[in-house]
Image (cartoon, rainbow, N blue to C red; front, top):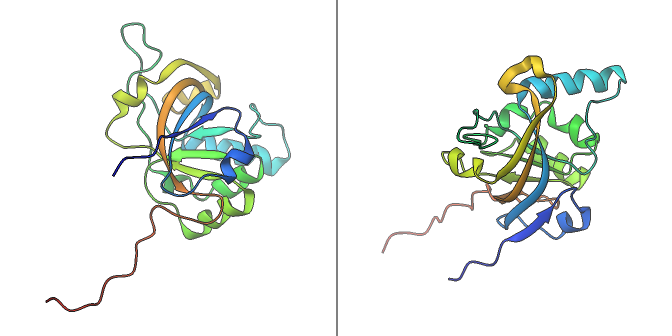
Length: 188
C-alpha cells in the first residue's frame, strides 16, 4: 500500500486545517513551536489562575513536549525527542482553553483530555520516541523565551522545518490509539 503524502502544517496553525485532519494522518510542521514540559505547564497554569499575563501568546500555537539537549557543531539543539504526554494531562485543558491548537509528545492521552481536544478544536500529534537526534535535525533555530531559571525545562521557541508527526487525537474525537474490539471467532 502506498502511504499518502504527509499534510503540511505551517505555524501559526490554521484551525480549518486542523478540522480536516484525521487520527493516523501524517503531518510535517514548519515554523515556530513552543517547547516545554511539566514545570512550565505548572508555571503557566499558575499565571492563568491568578489572571496574570503569560510570557508567550498561546493562540493557535504548537506546543512540543520536549527538553532538548545542547547542540554541538553549530547546531541549535542536540537530541530533541518527545516527552511522555500523559504527564501534562492535568494542565492540558486550561492551556487548550487559553488557545493552544496543537500539542506534540509521545504516548496516549487520558479520555478526559481527548474530549478536551474535541471541545477546543485542537489536535494531539504523536512524535516518534527514540529518534531525538533525528528530530533535532529539523530544528533550524532555538532560543529560551521564558523561565530561564528552569534550565533544560525552560520555555523555548524552536523554528522547525518538516518536523514529522502523526495525528494521535483529532479534533473530532478520533484516536489513533483506539484498540479495535478483539475478534472472538474460533480458530480454524
